Length: 173
Image 1 (tube, helix red, strand yellow):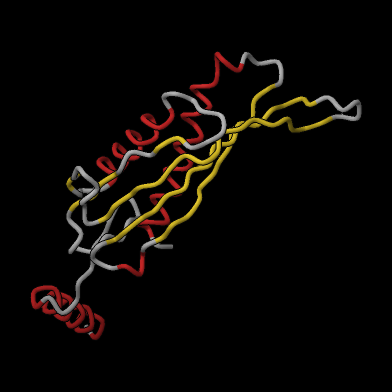
Image 2 (cartoon, rainbow, N blue to C red):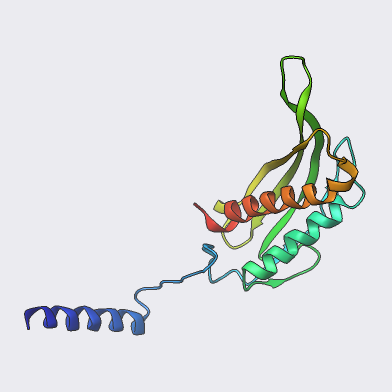
């Protein structure tokens, strides 16, 4: 009986706080902690400024980031980079290098790396703003036909980079 009183008392407090708006708790299945004031987002076109240019990389990255934001948040997409939260920047690196070099100085794998500079602006709370570089890579066998696997590698790398950008901008770990 004693425990029943505590349970009812706790339940009463929770209901009162919830109905009086004294406690505000928001849950997100994606881990994002987005302020209720933030209603929109925008993604500016990411120019490719890397020394080695892949013609479709800018468009692919920009579209993947837009799609990610649309599917992971309930924010409305805006154009002309005028959202409550704004993503802009440029692709600054796209390069390959040999890795896993053996004794006879022959590589057994190559690594494709992409680096993207992202400027994030939160117009509702500038303490979350950042201008950072994000990079990631994918390794592939030296004997693989790079032209045949390049698009798949790029997609894998961009997915990792976009996840990192989202976590830094909206998850606030």
